[in-house]
Image (cartoon, rainbow, N blue to C red; front, side, top):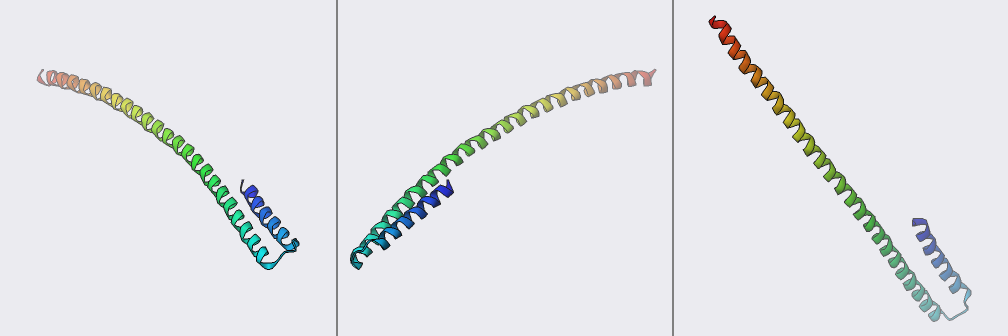
Length: 113
C-alpha cells in the first residue's frame, strides 16, 4: 500500500512537471498552473494520508478487540484454575484434619493404656 501511495504521488508530481515544462505559456500563467497543481497534489496527498490513517485505526481497533478477548479468556481461565486449586487444597486440609483427629484420639487412648 505504501509503494502504491508513493507511486501515485511521484506520478502526479512528474506529470505536473512535464506538463508545465512542455506547455509554452507566459510565466504568470505557468506560476498559476504550478500553484494549482501543487494544491491538487497536496489535496490528493491529504486524502490518501487520511485513508491510510483510517485503515490503520480500523486494524488497531480489530487488534485491540482481539487482545481484550484474549486477556478476558486468560483471566477467566486463571480464575477457574484458582477455584479448582483452592477446592483441592480445602479437600487436602480436611483429610489432614481428619487424620490429625484420628491420631490425637488414638494417641490419647494408647498413652492412657
